Length: 171
Image (cartoon, rainbow, N blue to C red; front, side):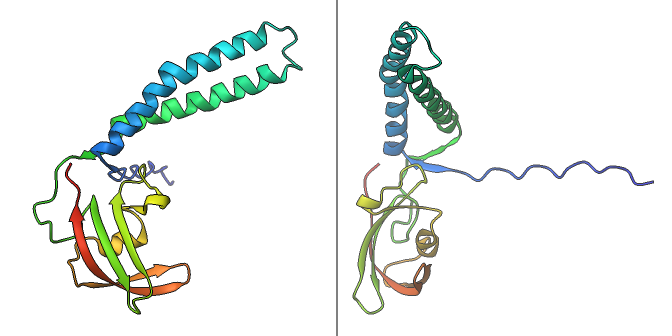
């Protein structure tokens, strides 16, 4: 007779890194949502509820939906702020690419030059060229030095990049 097996242990969650500035931005968002936006929305839903029949009251229905979405974001931020790891110090070896680095790379043909900052997944900003430490480009760059060449798998195929410069902003 076969005995039921216990399920395998859950995998340990990967570390989620964030810069000190990114952590402060998430804290500020949480504070603004909790102290400003939620009371405004609650007041609006209360006013809409006072208008009478709630089953056909669009302001009430959409207000409640917006309130649920806001509460979902609040729960996410509270949990995230407790679990993320803030990187406050610069690496000892600043000649290599690590988390928080500003990296300038050039494609093999010299036709593409990118200035990137390697940040946590909560800080990605494509307009500022901030990429996640988990992205293929960042993973290829981590631990490398100026002058090193790296192959990066991109949607249009593999591309060879040369690291031109590495810098770190003060914490």
